[in-house]
Length: 161
Image (cartoon, rainbow, N blue to C red; front, top):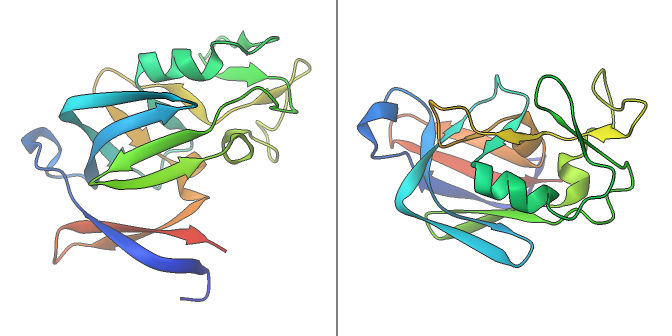
């Protein structure tokens, strides 16, 4: 594939019966900086090409933004941070034993309608809604190409060039 760096890593779709009709995987852990949050049981995580944001559990959101000076949360709950992103941590999603990392430049919105406010730059991160443990939307999928294999009930991810 011409847009892929390396191989596609295929992951089984979730075994969670509540999400069997969706493209979802089981999230084992989220690492924010040096803190790893393990999920027992695993957290069903939707992979959604129609969602802009990356929704993660409240504990992970709090850890991402814990030490960020100038942090603002707008009326819709979206996070605005200083555009340099210098104190933002990396976030790693562990799925089926494979790690998929987002660096701050991956989750800072630099272009488009949500690129910035007068206070700083918006991020692709938001707290998970009550109906889902996590959702990997465009903020994740712009870094990782996704491949959907219905026949084998799996989703593949590969780094974009």
